[in-house]
Length: 368
Image 1: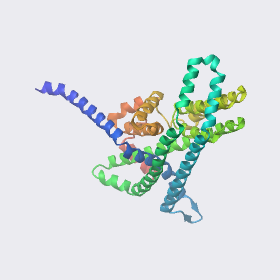
Image 2: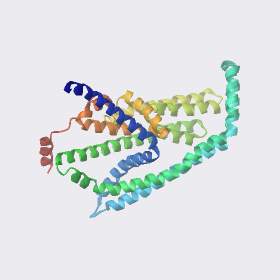
Image 3: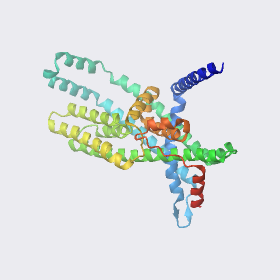
């Protein structure tokens, strides 16, 4: 009987883990309307709270800005920035719709220019494709989520505001939750701080690098007079948050439009080579130098996470895939049973080992 129990026990554990994984996947899929704004709000909160904490620590003479006032100003600025972005994106979409008839004419001219080496079948397929494409219906399918995005912006800002309120009581709650085990309370607080620091550093550096890359790409497109340069620049900024695939997409889209706009090869070559060079320089040279080991994730893990989160949460999942994997990596590295998972997820297998309680106490005493 004992032997049968010992044999059945691993099977039971495997079935238990499979059941947990299945239930978690169902929660992620069907809980998307609730979970997605919460995750976005948490990521925004990590970046905003770090900036607010720094501002509240600054002193001008003997005056220091109260934390609640700094948080209120930060939330107001966040709401303004999100509304401005929403307005800009909506305006660019309306501009593309207004120019759609002229874009169709360029598509027809382009198909005529390349008909010799495309072949009649492909040329006819292209003509049928853009003839059957209803830009009004396509724009309506974009505007509907965009209208819902306005509500989502307000919901996210409200979540961030309540997270600020809750963060003040978080250390006290953790201490009381693990009142019988102060060491565990310290570990939980440290994991929360490490997650906040890592996500904040990644998002802040990624935003700065994406902004610099976007300015370079925008300058190249304006140099040759590419139309809708503002649209492609805005698209480039957001796509840069999607590793590898984003930069490739941000290179292909303006390059294809350059083929439709220009008949000479010089401006087309400038757009293709210039945009590709800007993305390569930023993604392969500058970003690894600046970020260092901030993003210690395997390249294969990044691609798999992009695929998984895109299947679960759609386009929004591709933007959230890397920050979510950073959080998962940190949590797995702090849980002894999940530490092998963290090593597999990491880029080089170098996962910091948690300090023993005595060493942590000595270090804290030395700081005091």
